[in-house]
Image 1 (tube, rainbow, N blue to C red):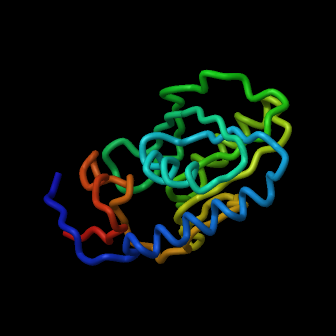
Image 2 (image 1 turned 90 degrees about the vertical axis):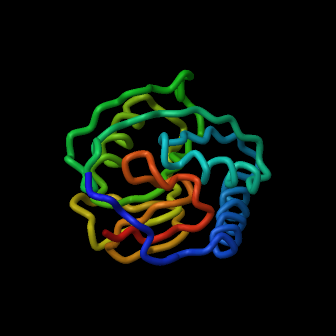
Length: 175
């Protein structure tokens, strides 16, 4: 593995904080009077989940899924493996997939189809980051924090080979 360094800050912690508050308010309005199950896609979305659930005012439960399509690469392989499945049934529950970033969309499309087969009352997607120009399948988030250019980003939970997750800002990674 070649050594990577942070090239520049793309989104600073204040911009992220403001956007998460906006997303939480919108989700709270849309699910008023309902209970919501947040399905966090591990590991990258855990920081976003922690902040987002505190910004949501309707009752929430959380569960986690871990899927793999990257390994140590910087591009999705398109082959998805479920490494950790949900602990609870989602039958007839309002569910929101919490994703850190949507890139090719291959992993998320697989995940959405898998979860829809379990008969939730509703299933939507919130992502902090979206790279629409990288999309290989027809999938779009219901809630999106930021559309970003086609650059490899780390920080705020996003990693490269398990490094950089703890950075408070979202940064572009360089050689």
